Amino acid sequence: MSIIRQINNTFAAPDLRNSATVVRLLIIVLGSLFFLPLISDSSLSYSAEIYHHSKWIFPVLLGILIKAYFVNIFVPSIKEAPYGVIITYLLNLSIFVVVDFVVLKTNGRALSQHFFLFNLFLLGLMYYEGSRRNGLAPSVSEARLSALTARIRPHFLFNSLNAAISLIRLRPYDAETLLENLANLFRAQLRDGSQSSTLGQEIEWAQEYIAIEQIRMGHMRVQVMWQHQAPDDAETPHLLLQPLLENAVFHGVESTHRPGMITVFTKLNKSSIYIRIENPYTPPESSENAKPHKGNSMALRNLKERLTLMYDNDAKIQSRQLDGIFRVDIRLPYRKKASDVNRLFG
Image 1 (cartoon, rainbow, N blue to C red):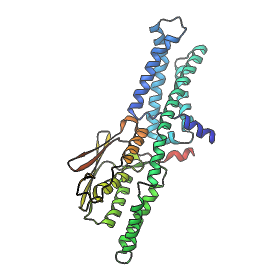
Image 2: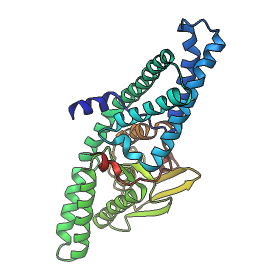
Image 3: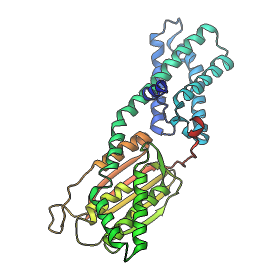
Image 4: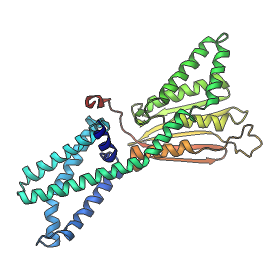
């Protein structure tokens, strides 16, 4: 298993659901196609050499894209399986063999040349994808560490426990609800951060967090308007909403003595999920800010890097301040969360 783990860390299967990944793939293929004749010792002309390579490159590329489409529909978790990289490589290799050997019936010398070029290109592409993911891995680890420390802050934990203790005799139901929600939040925090979630699950965790804050600080102090109009089965990164709502409460409500309205809006537009979170914003230097908290962009930065790792350039996150409001806008590609089939691969 250590060899498999080392391969998975060095190489990675590109996620062809991301448009940016497909564009990069096409650019690399076209660039290689126009570059190959320059280093070839063939007697064919430049245009004839391009046509010669195009006959096998484009059918193989089309087969790989079609394979990726059906894999992403029926077994999308294959890339996260322990043997996912090897399985992906063998599937792509089988497509090459069928196209080059069976369909085109290439002779032995040309087949060996095509085989070398195909493996050089494919392994190079998977190595690049592995390097790109490894480059973002520290951000994911930092996000998981902050999830265990900063995201559920110690003062929030202690205040929640003290609130539960004070409610046990007078309002035992609220005390029980608070502790159950707190346990669910910690269970979610301790999950593997590399796992994806669903928008419905993220909404549920966010509502449990808000319920704790409303019991602790009062329903009139912490008010949330939910406008959830997106599919619950939409795939999202793990712990997408709760850290943002915790920042909204910490910086937008708890820093002042006034009630605060937080708005959470989700919708599906064509093939994208749009999420907007708004909370009151009082500048730290304002006299109305009773507990000035320094702005902390760590959660936003980590979330942006996790979105890049998961969706490449197909996802976007923006934050801005306007007229006493702090707004966070997120756009994700809509993908239905698939069943957990990676158990089939160990």
